[in-house]
Amino acid sequence: MSEYPYTVEQAADRLRLHPKTVLRFIREGRLQAVKVGRAYRIPAGALDPFAGVAPATVNPARVTGIVDIEAVDDEGVRRLSALVGAAHLGGGHGESLRVDLAHDPVRRSLKVVTIGSPGDVAALLKLIDIWLERRT
Image (cartoon, rainbow, N blue to C red):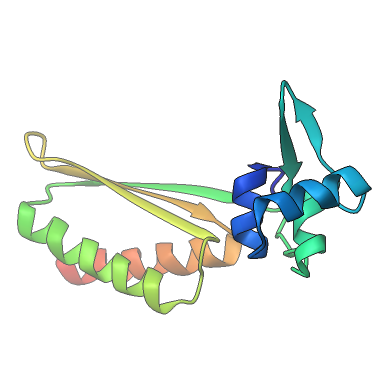
């Protein structure tokens, strides 16, 4: 769970309340907050249960995979980017999988960096492996 410190205004927007109502909840002790200078900050850990949001289950294991591909032209980058993007969007991963591509046109190399759960990264690496086999 993120401990993002919300301002009173951000908390009010998230709760769909007026900022004065949020301040009243803080002063009454109904909503946990920390005073920073003259303003309050509300941790997400306090705001989410107050808003009725169930805590997200987080997979404690994260994997980083880096695939370095040589001899890739612009068309190959475009095709692999489309394939990886479609797999990422269609997989229902949400925020659990991050994919970045870095292309060096001078060296004609491409790096694909994946960060996510072991299963998600493994599935994406398998897809990249299939693409590489068909490319040659």
